[in-house]
Length: 68
Image 1 (cartoon, rainbow, N blue to C red):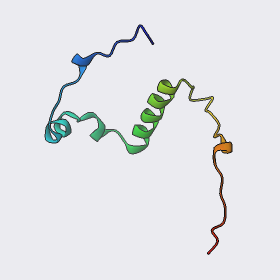
Image 2: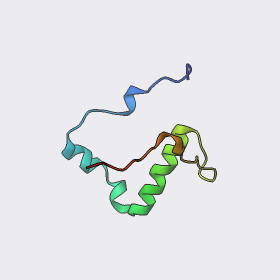
Image 3: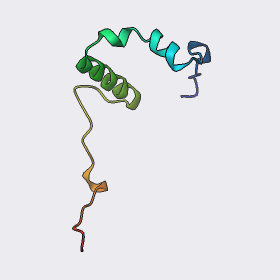
């Protein structure tokens, strides 16, 4: 990651109204397709493939009954 440098010229600050007007692409894409695209970006960010998804580590979760 030492070779990676964030390109700050790719984005600019804008109001919510400007951002909504600029975001025309997502208005024509169906909701399931947007979810698929988001999952693909997450898989690229965390380094796993769409076909070989990581398993949930259940050792971090515990549950117990409340005593009232």
